[in-house]
Amino acid sequence: MEPWLEIALYVLGWLALALLATTLARGLDRRQHPLRGTVRMVRGLVLPALLLYLVGWRGLHWDPQGTPLRIVETLLWLAGILVALSFVTNTALMRREGNTFAARYPKLLIDILRLILVLVGGCFVVAGVWDKDLGGMLTAVGVSSIVLGFALQNTLDNVMAGIAVMFERPFEVGDWITVGSLTGEVVEMNWRSVRVRTRARDMVVIPNSVIGKETLVNISRPTRAHAESPVFGFSYDDPPNKVKRVLLSVVRSTRGVLTEPQPAVRTVNYAAYSIEYQVRFFIDDYPRVQEINDEFMTRVWYAAKRNRLSIPFPISVNYEYRQTMPKPVVKHRAVDVLNSVPVFVPLSPEELEQMSLDCERLEFGRGERVVHQGDPGDAMYVVLEGTAIVTVRTDNDAEREVARLSRGEFFGEMALLTGDVRSASVTAVDDLAVLVIHKAALHAMLARRPGLAQEMAEIVEARRQGLRALQELQDAAPEKKAAVQKGAGELVQRIRRFFGL
Image (cartoon, rainbow, N blue to C red; front, side, top):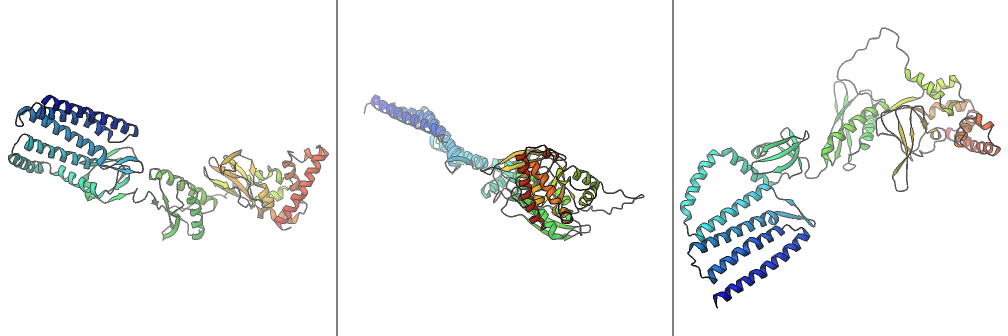
């Protein structure tokens, strides 16, 4: 075959392969496939070098042992090594998750394979292309390696430990780990060390040799569920079962706590000043562990106050009073508060004073529910301090705010008088204090005064009909009076049934 014809065939073959590589690269670009860079390198480096080698060797008949052809062959090998490195980096060391290429193997493994490819390719070029003996070179490299091994003993220790960590894979980038006393998120793994970002947003570099020697805890594995086990101490006078019920109620209402595995409360110790209880609950968002613990710890204090549980001091405290202790302020305030509630207008000052003895003050923290829509009830609440929002559930189970309650306002009067289920939920906007009037506080008065139920029913019904006070009923239209009287009559029957009168 004529040399010019053979060269023409090589050029046409190169054009066809280049066109095919271009088409393939564009298709991979549209799919964002990791091989797109490798295909471009084949088109831009390997194919031109291969064409030049074939033209020189077969078309121009260059001497195979001559320097020009060896240089071209060396360039072809270098292009092949670069393509192999690209392939290893972009594809071979990526595992497929679903339909996306996302999760990389550790950078250390990529670097090791790159080095191996470069060394093997270099040996082929030196021995195969330039016909050089590798024996002397390997001897020199071996001696140099021994010297470097002694000089870089600590570094090599870290590298070998890094290789062990890489193959064992006790953690990955993004996991939260504890090494010794350090806890943080893994952000990078390399030849020498692992970089961890702590909660203080500091970057800590942990040598691989340290990780190999220390006890390592992976908080994110085998699942993202992580257990917290705070311990609380309560007074010996508090019944353990009551304490457990209160703590379980608080932990279940804390945002971020998983329902499965279920939270648990256990009695763990009879200590010097208290009975200790361990609360065990699980979360799946470890970066928020401090926020979740803060909300839980805060709510425990309010729940303990509401349920009259004591969290004792771990010291002995002696109080000495040199004068008569004042009467509790809450009772006097309760009388004033009850006197301002329209439902209790028919009560005499003595009856209000008697009722105040059975009332109690409860405190709620921000975000806690006072009552839940749909729950049964037999108590009425008056806001003493703070603000609360009233919400109702819509058809799609979303909650819609319908009112805000502040100091002096009340809710739950129908639950107190008739035992109706809660028609709405009430939630504390900030720290909230309420006065609770229970059914028992009103029962004796209704039994002693049969007409009291009628008076209270008329007040409630007048307010439902839009009248602010009974005095307005005297001037109301006849149909309005009739509606009030009819509604009050029905309400009286419900009150009497509820109180068993």
